[in-house]
Amino acid sequence: MAPAKNLTMVMNAGSSSLKFKVFQALGNGELESLASGLCERIGDTANSRMKAKTAEGGSVTLQEGFSDHQDALGLVSRFLADTFSSSFTRSVHSVGHRVVHGLDISAPVLIDDGVKAVIEKAISLAPLHNPAGLQGIEAAMATFPAAPHVAVFDTAFHQTMAPAAYMYALPKELYDEQAVRRYGFHGSSYKYLVPRAAKTLGKPVESLNAIICHLGAGSSMCAVRGGQSVDTTMGLTPLEGLVMGTRCGDIDPAIVTYLLGQGHSGAEVDALLNKRSGFLGLTGHSDLRAVIDGAAAGSAPDRIALDVWRHRIRKYIGAYALQMGGPLDALIFSAGIGENSSILRAFLLEGLEWYGIALDEESNKAAVDGVAGNITAPGAKVQVLVIPTDEELSIAEQAIEVVDRT
Image (cartoon, rainbow, N blue to C red):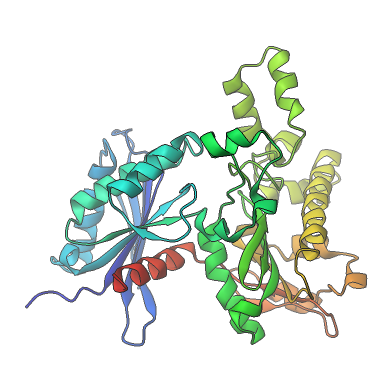
């Protein structure tokens, strides 16, 4: 008897890593996570290893040399076959791949040569992510040749933005010939959060007006009007927008030319803005928890860094509220910082009662460590929600939808 094709693999390939998660389709249409893991230090065969865990709580760390993503995925397949069934690879219904940049592709798509060409074309805009994405796709197609493969792009959710939001005031030929525009990222997270927020509020998705704060080491915000993205903080690349762990976010672009004129190379400036700025640049710590501790202990640089972080986010809250075209239904917090730091949520929203945004202190404290919650104070006009995101589940849902309709 042929194995039931009821499993979906989700893959997120980095330059030296490969994350995976396996979902099983249940009879009620829901998806259940069976296993997840990370292959790290791919290419460093002396130190590469796989860490994996199952839904039942079992965990394993396997030390094995991975020369490339194909080697890593081979170990993943053996682990899953040993853990679940020798016919595991034949039970895979679909494979969903997280791809960072898809230019103007506006929906998840079956991967073919044309899609691969788009991913390759976008390498110049996502040089750290898209090459690894292609490597992961090629490895997975060799490992699961009978399964359809779907690309789910971080940029796709924001393709509903109007030209007023995505165009830069630069010579138009840069857009026409080199695709220079705002794309936005974290799309799988936003696509996951929007319908769940609408359900929480008892509203149809198409009538939801919300500002979503995806706050983590990489952070962005999205203005959602009528259930669709109308603006977002990240731009051509993930560098634009909020203050992040090591990224500067918004700056005067003349700083770049100034630094180049001072003798810094282009590569040095790029590394400075992406890897040495943000909280790391302001405080010496990229982890926001260390910044919070420092501020509490009286460190002036840490306190200033938190003030800069808050100022930027509140500026975008105000700007995005004007994009709603009507009342703002909700302000939503998600991702590592947004989901887990009640202290920072309270700090961010302090003094906004005049605008109808106020927190219930006890509800705010309770909504941590993966616990969702409505943390709105009684009588406040704007609902404040904490919704843990699940980008892997979002990718799995989108992959299944694409395969089932083809």
